[in-house]
Amino acid sequence: MSCIGNARPLEQALQHATTEMLSLLVEDYGLSVNEASLLLGQVVEYKVANVFNPAYSVACKIPKAYLPVRKS
Image 1 (cartoon, helix red, strand yellow):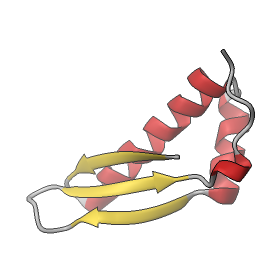
Image 2 (cartoon, rainbow, N blue to C red):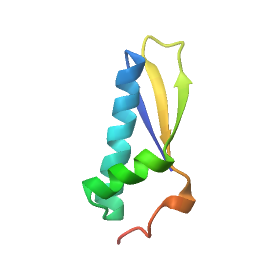
Image 3 (cartoon, rainbow, N blue to C red):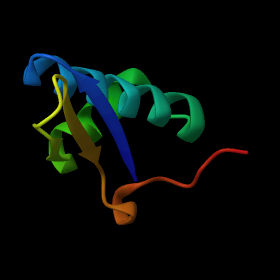
């Protein structure tokens, strides 16, 4: 699963992508903010997706194997 952040500077794009992933884990998977933060701290992967535009794009990724069952 991945979320994309787009901003300038690069650090801001990374922060946007991470914030979106945290929100997704809390809202769609039912994790608490602390649980989602711990999960991100252990398994998150970042990919710089764009450096040629005036803004950078960063993908925040979590392997599906680490995701809990999605709440309905």
